[in-house]
Length: 411
Image (cartoon, rainbow, N blue to C red; front, side, top):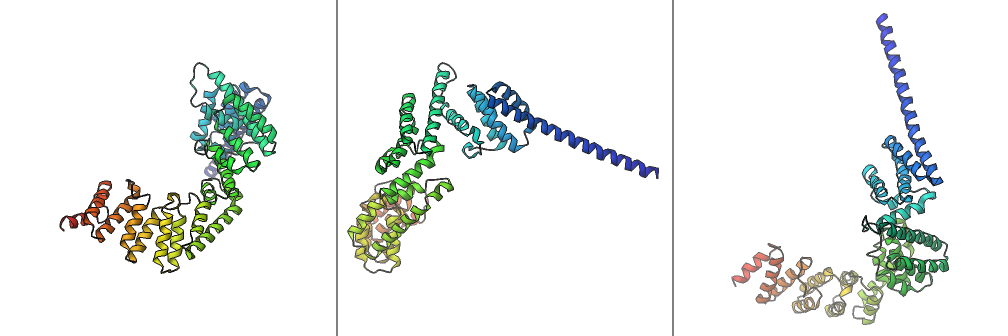
């Protein structure tokens, strides 16, 4: 009986020690969360030094608390930023990647009260990458900060369609840094709002490759819409496909469905009337840069089991004059068809007219190989050998290249 009482006593002691430890742990967590909240209060009062001291201690206790740690790093980085400490700000921002595995800060849910400030911080860090630590760093930093603040204010005016305020701000931004690509973005937006779609396209087409990632989808959005309203349906699809955010794509789904339907209609019309040059010209004009256009037209025409080979040849000859409307698949499918129809001479002519004939790179390896095969089939062994050697130089033992070279050597 005494032994059982002893065990019960030990169990009860351990139970209460566990409860006590849990309470201590809960109180400790509350302590660090309270430090975080106090730091935020100091930040809002503009007392950034005290805020930083609180955040430094709170970070230690919240390192495993993801939700609170995100909030802490947001205010912690902003506190250093408000004091002009760019290097310290960068170190805190790096902790998003290191401790939280967050690489793209644009997807962070930032409290509304600091959203604009944090965007200015991110943009400023992007712009200060090339600034040296000595000399005129502070002057440059102040200029960048001023630019970012005016730019954020301009974006707010854009939301409310205050175009006059936007235009005034653009003048101010130009005085600070006229080379900043976002000025071009703002001008493009204004052109779009004024329904000057060609101007919008010419402004934004120059910057979409180089502008900061944060604004790329917006640029693609306005390029998609502007090309649609300007009747450039091929470019509409091209820029739509460059948009990365699903929510931005969803906003454009209505017009994209219309464009896809237009494309399908004109493909069907040409497939039925392959000799209609006016339809071809219309397709090329509306779908500039659509390299799959004639490939899809050819597939549709051939699927209809049309037997007028001359019409197909005429259509292909018209197509190869416009390099931006066809791809390698189009040429290879044409060659397959003409071989089946035993029109070898025409196949060679089309290949020689195509944009791939004078190139020399691995991307077009199959083109050179097929041309070599056709020369061989046409018993033009000298040209066949020349092409097979070109293939062999680009890639050893490609398909049956060695077989053909040996065969020609033994003729």
